[in-house]
Image (cartoon, rainbow, N blue to C red; front, side, top):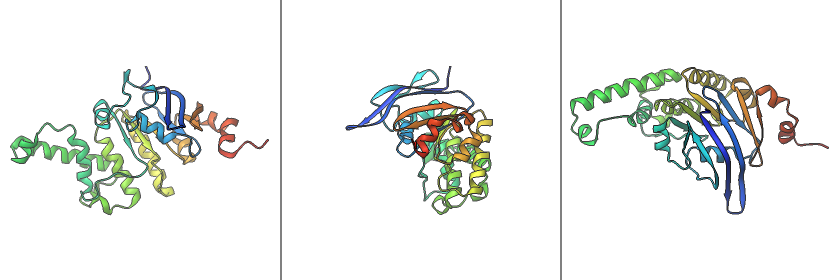
Length: 253
């Protein structure tokens, strides 16, 4: 059984069809890229999968369960998280506290216990802090733990967002243009990090415009064009597909 299935996803905004009958599946343990020219519908598709939009037609199936329209907190509890093209951080909180937010979704201590600093709440908070630091170490920014997140350079902010998502211990992570705004050195580091995430047993799906990154790390690639699935296959198959070349470069008859 595939980890994620998209069956006939259609999205209409007013009179505009952003997605039309898009279907494909994601296998557990794969790194899958979703690519296409600007306006192809990639981010719209991600927003449907992660519950930001409710599709006009079709179903989103995660590990055999229809999750269409479920909110982000329910999806996180089921094991699905995402990152955004525009980094979403709590700028006035420290780097460590940002990751702790992701871990508090599994906290057992309630408001009363935390407010009155009950012993078990203090122990749990210490455990959460230690685990958050481990995730910062995993993405390579543990030395920035005490810095306010709003003061981070862009590339480090991207690593923090990924650390916070991973703190939820997902089985599937969706990344929306994770290489956007990164320089070449940071992009190489991102590629290595995505492989490390996959090695933890986490399935990865990414929307990305950096074709060198996509071709380097993805097991399979899905190509969208004008709201429809154009094709899918291995990186080599996609590179050699004339329809994909025409979609990106134009078909000169």
